[in-house]
Length: 73
Image 1 (cartoon, one colour):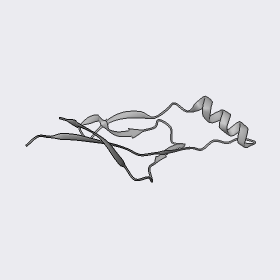
Image 2 (cartoon, one colour):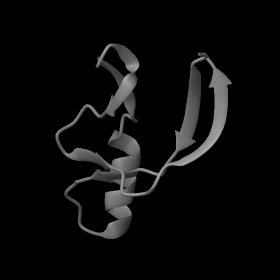
Image 3 (cartoon, one colour):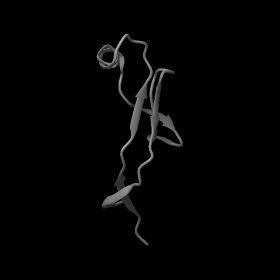
Image 4 (cartoon, one colour):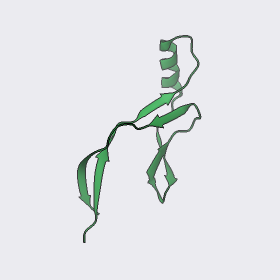
């Protein structure tokens, strides 16, 4: 029997907690400080989990996955 990799996509929400005097300053701080989303080794490879570097950053995924592509393994 053949193996297939079925690919799907979902939206994630990134939350960064900063101290600021107003909303504009908060957005500017996040744009200057956020280092992006990273792949980390885990569960047998670098494609298994995502993470962030700072304790004031979190990632959540509350949306359903839409499977929209397939490749033979």
